[in-house]
Length: 98
Image 1 (cartoon, one colour):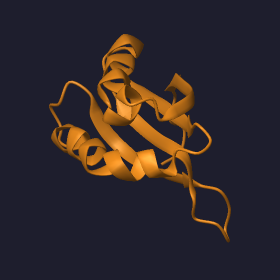
Image 2 (spheres, helix red, strand yellow; image 1 turned 120 degrees about the vertical axis):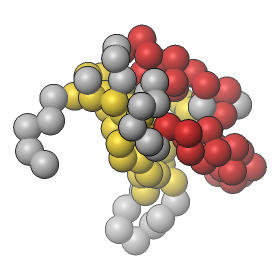
Image 3 (tube, one colour; image 1 turned 180 degrees about the vertical axis):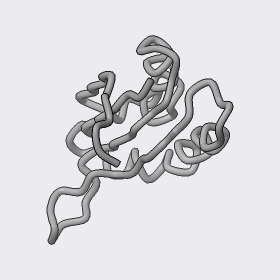
Image 4 (cartoon, one colour; image 1 turned 60 degrees about the vertical axis):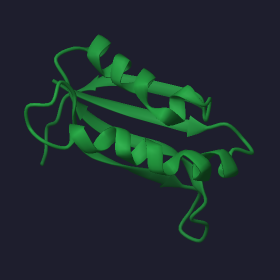
């Protein structure tokens, strides 16, 4: 099943994001291939606007067996563990196009 994970950074956490970016990316590397417990389908930062590329948060599409598995994956993210996110939404997503 597919899940969407939308995370909004807490205000004033730009430096925290930069400090933990490498660990965040390394955490996802094993999950890019088929056969992973939770597979990362698409991901990237959300930006404030067309004119401002300041990170607002993170967007991901995950393939997992269950919502619980997607939530466990989220809990292991270094950004989650250091308290970067203020709001998090994880929901099953039904792809209709693409």
